[in-house]
Length: 340
Length: 259
Image (cartoon, rainbow over all chains, first blue to last red):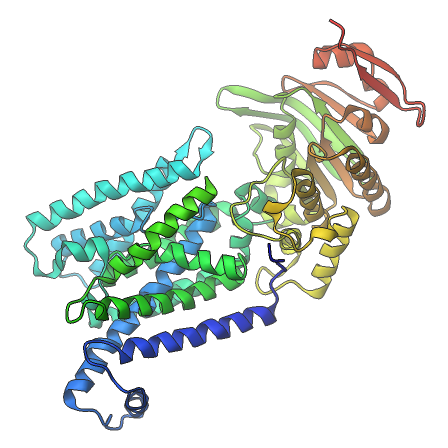
């Protein structure tokens, strides 16, 4: 067992620089690779030129691929990867359960139902989709939380079981709603069950990124309280945390991150499970590192997973949710065996 | 008075757990709460800690009612050590002890050098510094229990609430823990309230004893007043012999197992 020390500002900055470099690397990979491969030199020149409003020096086709297809998709990946990882880390601390994750708990499916309902019934309202997804996520979080509470408190198994049951119920609702509706904006069953970064709608990307960034930042501000909460609610309370209020804020923020992600790119599973686990194993459980590190690593891993999803069976594509589930589900089993 | 709890009532659903119990702890005083399992000791402690709200009665900390204090204010005055804390995430012993500094910090940012010094001192006092950098879940139950105590000491409270602080300890660390309590009470003027089944050590170290039976005060008084054969036999429903500890002169309780 390697020794673990407390977190210092210096070590935090070091790790975050490392992870941020990984993010830049993954970002470049995601832009370079695909059905058509770009040269690294022309990519950086084009990005540089674009920023300063000069001609990019690329052919029209390549320019379209880069700026209309790959760049928004990469930003979707960054936003979704960071949001889901931070939502997962927060839920894990709140529920004191390393297996908690938006997808496993059914929160993503709840967000999908909310988004679908808002598309069917309130299509014309602006932002109806993210608001519907957020509402669906919040309701699901609380339902699963209460289903997961037994007579003797919350147990790991009971919570996961509550998530499984809720998910299967919500999936049935998704399929029902998609079958009865012919609204073209609904984007297919696979999108809502498995997630696909290629289906993101660029017009909402900017707002969503800002909202996600703000939510992640607020969670980061609460990092020390998360540290106390992951030990226990009573323990956190005795150390001066207003547990009831902070819990609600954190559940709402985690639901917001999940809801926004699902409204953008559908339900992508397990990233919120894998990423915090890696950081805890490699460095620390301290949320002052875990939250920003999970954001960087989650974004990087989703960028890389999506690059794989786009290239592995080219010219066809896999939904990125299939890749994350292929890696995440076995890890889930491993963690389940370790915890129970 | 550092802490005074008066006429506390509490029930879980229809089951009355604490019934009209009062208790005072002064600075530098060690108050022990004894009683059989399920007699309401831990619940009483949580009421004093402000973790549970009494159905009736008040708790005052330095003449301020605890309900009018913020969580942070309470945490600056009172440290509470629960019986057992189960950890789901990897956390080193020193990280856990540093959590005790939270009520004194800004809420943001990192622990100061002084915080780290205080945490290390608390770990020295509880004989846990040797495994400061080991993961809490890899420690033995007794080692973990001392780390929990270290966190409470690092919190620099005026009142220390300890729920069975020696239940997992070997005999030498039991004595060491009681000696440490005595030292904290005498030197730092910390008031200590502990729930314990460590009846003989209590007889030697406690300044005041509260004996609970079925959620009610059976007797509250000094060691001499409480450590009487008929009192203990009635509360614990078991036969005992009482004589004197030949080393210290304190009452000594021997369990009489003859039936």
